[in-house]
Image: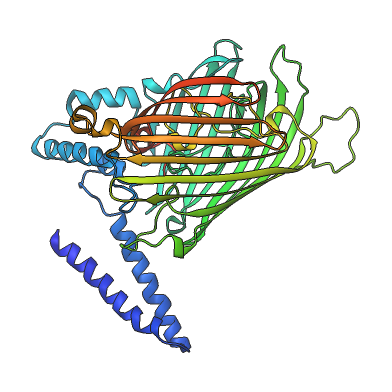
Length: 486
């Protein structure tokens, strides 16, 4: 193995040495420009190869590190704990001729199992049987199956289908997502989704959840379960440049109110897009490996427009279509203070440019955390009422402070024996019509892997306090394989 590292470092050094004098020159000839582009491309390929290099040589273990950010963003107790566990598992597996023993069997029963043939077939585990829950449908029970085929290095096609039954509403739901991973160098992903459901119709991959790819609830995703929806959606995500990412989608929903709910049957044809810009001068890393989404400093813009395909004229007897325009912008990023402390910041502002026809599903909602979820705490509210809307305009301010040595992480028990870190969370929401909601919280856990948090919120208009305990398990995103590129 050492000679491989030397080869990689030597080639990278030569490319940097060759690039330096060219960059120092002015008035480059066309030949020099071509040479510069070629060498810069070589440097980027070498950096990516090093970034993707296996760390333990065991695919099942190495998958957990596929989203590990560059230092110092990975210097938390989560990745320290994960590396320690992975090293122990690697030693045990290499020294044993067994296939994993009862622990591996237990994990497969709980989390599911993949069977590799010419096409990969994946089945859900026991923990996937309880798929969702809301006040109208009650508890969902369901099961999903994956069929996947690798098309090349970093390219694959995956079909994820599930069928669910809601105990309270007695409805059967089915959801299907066809994912095409293409252009791995550009993080290309195309998704075709369709089905019959009452929950969110914009399918997020584990990578998008773990990294917080979307700066707000995408498309028509909302907590509203009052409609049964037949839907079809096509979306595409791609990296345009090293600092520019684009996501676009087109969604159709036929929304019929649940039995006994006095809402209007209507439809929505919604086009939406998000663009992320991370300026290079704000995101330099010593290793040259790009800082990933979720940690880098970036500006985001989101635009949504719902329109009537029949034009502005519509008969009184026709099923109405949602019609509105929404614009939202945000800045966010992680600021490392030292090897033990970092801060996450995010400021968001948005408005409706027009509101000709809005149903409850089209209002502005905010991401909420259930009691147990795989979304990181920084991306969700814990105490905000689920149907608190942004009105015509809104703004949010969010700060998260993470430390390896702050409160409980300084004690011998939590910080010494359990090797946990702690964090403070604060966020505030203001609407254009004068409403406001504030939330603070404290959490302890293992970095980006698992956290336990206690939160307190306050509705300034209703003068009502809210308290919530939440568990965040982003490690479930790392263990997932159903909607992943690899």
